[in-house]
Length: 263
Image 1: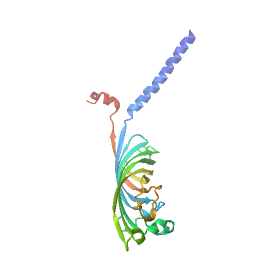
Image 2 (image 1 turned 90 degrees about the horizontal axis):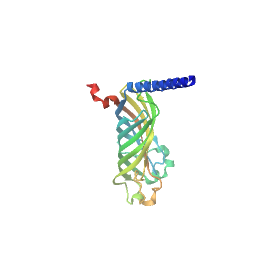
Image 3 (image 1 turned 135 degrees about the vertical axis):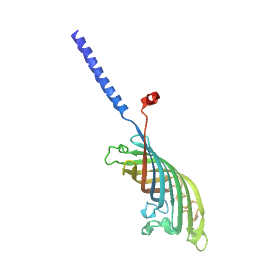
Image 4 (image 1 turned 90 degrees about the vertical axis):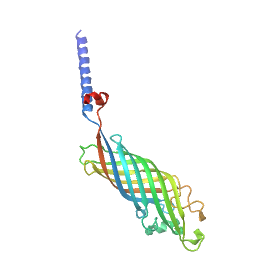
């Protein structure tokens, strides 16, 4: 009998402990009001090409680029971002110019061409933030992140040839503007830093993997067959950004189910 009573007492105590943990968790969950954040921002940086003409990333090959974006948090770690990036060579110059490395770029020296590249990119990426950037209790608020997504590219390139052997004419010749669209896979790394509750500073470096090999106007049907059909072109964007964060306090679920409580 005593054993039975002690067993019942133990079960009651255990039930009370579980109940207290449950209710304390429910109370804390209800007291924590969820907040949704979204951002709009603008960035400035450089766009860069890599391919047969410039087989490795060259910082001096960057041409001016601007970007605007919208970012929205999906969880403490995941944010989604949609962006628009535009780039254009402002002055008439060799787009892939880096005289210090002429010797290791034989295609560039052989073709003797000047390229003028313009591009517009529309992208959608997912960012993974390593820290809870939107926790206002953090001092300072900063988080590195990685991102990956998909992008559509519209580009236009103008080519001025200086080699009569390649262009089949004497003197310089400007090839027609070549305008195309392409699909790319953007991925890269970045870091966010909160200047205040609403204003943010960002730094990002990203690569874009293309599924074609025409960004440099180097085509397989060209004389001498300089294009490598097994090595698609790449392009990059690196820059800094400033953004503004909007905070929206969501209604707790209990009030959503019983809207009359707010009347």
